[in-house]
Length: 487
Image (cartoon, rainbow, N blue to C red):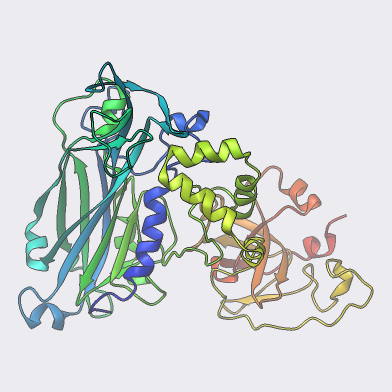
């Protein structure tokens, strides 16, 4: 377990920033784009009653985390084991353009205004907020506690000067317009409880279930969507740290903690270990499901606010925008302007790095890397290029049992499994081949016995692939199936 100053918090914050702004503004980053007429962000905690009224989202997110504590640490002194929580979110900020009327002392809202060749648009921005709470002693958590969350309302004025005034010194009487930025007050609560799971010790350590809940407690039920989002916590997520303790993965828990992990409750957020591999004192509770120890790809030089897109394609599309489209994006939002400027400033080397990088999320420990001989004139992708591997004949040993084409296995998807793999958990499958890649990893191709189209998938070569440690051998290979192969 780690303690001290949480050296991996910087890496965790980089990922948390990506979560915070995911969906904030979408390509082509213009206010006039249809997709940007709605807010597509995750982790929105709406005011109570907004979801039932059909104008907002549910007010709460909740997650359970597992905490392991050495008996010596908890017995050392009261307050030795602590937990701190950083609640991070965006507060909506409406930016209204107002035009001077009559003698310049009165103003009226407009959708846009041009002053001295500059264009100004009305738009909804957002202000990042961070509430650092704690540290809370383990003894406090076991009793349960509730902490109020409060963000004040605010209003800022920015004068749009005429040609005879500087931007800094424009006076209300002389300004042809102004920007009014308004923020509504936010009110919420953080609830923390810790429960000892004494019947399930973890390697001699105490195992506790830590429950963290954030709720929007704004008064009144909004009647329109604009009011609901203005009083919502947007992009809400949590960075939780501990001292003299360690978090246990609920995604890939040790055997002793699997039952406890299965009983954990998660509502609208998911907890993952954050920071570098091997660190267990930082937890990220995200409204987007992530793997343990997530990180931002080093090739991703621009925050594009859309992780469902391929960075290279999105960057190239930004570069193909017309000058008029780029100009509108720049005046839509300062963060959109930063995207345009950063994409235009990318070097050739940076663009080439976006083209792709192959990384394995993990390496199967039982596999050894090997080299492939030069195939000569045979294309490298042809099966004849490497006769040292024969998926239809190769064998991998799992729990002392040889597994090859025709073997029946039960599927046990582990961490890093995608949704389709998880749906097949516990199913019986028939092995179609054993594949070895150039990194030394082993991939077992299977078809599901319950799938009525299994024969068709085998004929086309469309398989599900699992690592050997995700399979449970059931019986020796089927000799008839081994000989059949694909037509």
